[in-house]
Amino acid sequence: MPSTRSLLGDEVTDGSQQAYRIAASPPFFGIPFETARRVPQAKAHAPENVRDQLETGPGPRVADPSKLAASAISDDAAQAQAPVGSKDDPPLERSLERCQLQLDFLSKELAPWQADHPLVGAIEFMSRRKSEAAHDPKNAHRWTAPLAAQERTLYAVSTELTELLDDVTKTGAKAGDAAGLGPVVE
Image (cartoon, rainbow, N blue to C red):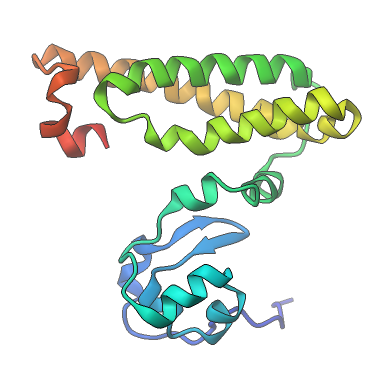
């Protein structure tokens, strides 16, 4: 049975080929300023400082996913996107430890290439989880499945990053060349 619930800004207009400009992390989405200006519901639900910017000036042409990633609301997105827990998931404490190890590794490898800035959201997320585990262990266990999934993702990313950096350095590139390697390291 199709949903009868209308979507925010449910009018289809020209320009759908510009979807790459949307920062998607269901159930949350960031949209570029000029799009938000045309969607009354987007303006109505925007934070006050963003509402002011929508009225007064230009904004970014592509929504910045790091804003959501570095916010506490990303916790809601993580819960909504998390797989159902399984008996094979490691204990919360183990996932926290392994996620931290993976993030430390990624930071160490990416920092010399000036490409570690996308990790800020994940690092802040982990900081919130560790704090919650220390102060409210009972409630923190709701993060067991999401953190197990996060650890698997971070492990896969670490593995692929290792291979990528090996390929890049085999070309003779060095971390000091990062500025000239823009698309490769971004």
